[in-house]
Image: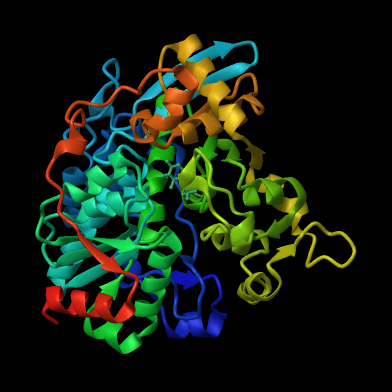
Length: 491
Ligand SMILES: *Cc1c(COP(=O)(O)O)cnc(C)c1O
């Protein structure tokens, strides 16, 4: 299995074939594109039949071995077995089974269609990012040991990604994490989750500033290529290919759990921001999984909904990017979207490159086919099954209340956006699976507003705010930041 960049000419791709392990530790391709397999591996009906009986870990192994062809089977099997355990994904609801890893729950099964929730948030940080990040931690440790190398992950977070990365990398040999967050700007719960980690390879740096100051520091340090190389600095952002491919697994799992025969189809609704999660659904569909529709649910930051309704991709300026009560979807552009656009324009890398150059110079592109537009490929979007919808703070509150009243469970704000939009796309005969991307306890402020009472906390999180915290406070100063990193890596 070889990987190509969405911007590579065929000549450069042929000169420079990349395997899974070559792109594992990286982000963007050198030409600025994103990596994709040269072609998608296909699944057969016989495979799907056999996979119905597998545990989550076994299924993950079967799917990953189609992509990670340069990792020996026995090693991959051990890595997936170690990652997808009931102990790691232990925060299932009391009436659901942790052994299922991503348990399904039928919410309604009426004349309008069947609405199902797939829980992806039972990992250590109570959000779906653990599904991929936990595997990444084990893959990184494995790859670094194989090359006798080390890696220093340097990133900025306003919440979910940073904590998922820290819980995945804690205690891993060869890896350190330096995570910047805006001092005193995260919720008490999120701060406690990250800062209570005592592992010596985790460095929490509270920056005196806002999230943008943290991101600017990461950019400034990463742009110093000599420093970056010497300090072996890497990232684990949402464009990382291994993260995307790990997410493909739960689409198969959801399909197999919701059906009894391969002639049946399902649809998925995915609370979306950077398009990483739903991109994995798109890949599962391209592999032949019988997915009917893939519905992108956005919040008020509706870049993706606008594209899937009109064919116009228009990134937002900072002043047009709203802080919402589903904050993990507060994005101004969708960093994985290029992976789908490449497909949509017929895997034409030159075209893809030109379109995303236009994003940089003109803030977007238009594939609606209207006079003066950049193309008419929007007409082909339906072939890929994509639909969309948008949800607001008021919708979120109403949906959290409805779901509590009707089904007796509390859902988080991002999942509420998913359910709101899913209900608009129900179809009799095709189960609609909504991906639950976080647990309510993480976003308690809004739960309190919606229900007048606190969200339930999973066992072990009751008192997290009172645990001792380990972090340093630093000004937004690049020189001090570099000195801190160098001091702690010893490189
Ligand atoms: C990251 C995140 C999302 C958005 O996922 P993308 O892959 O960026 O589209 C949605 N909900 C939660 C809770 C998240 O943490």
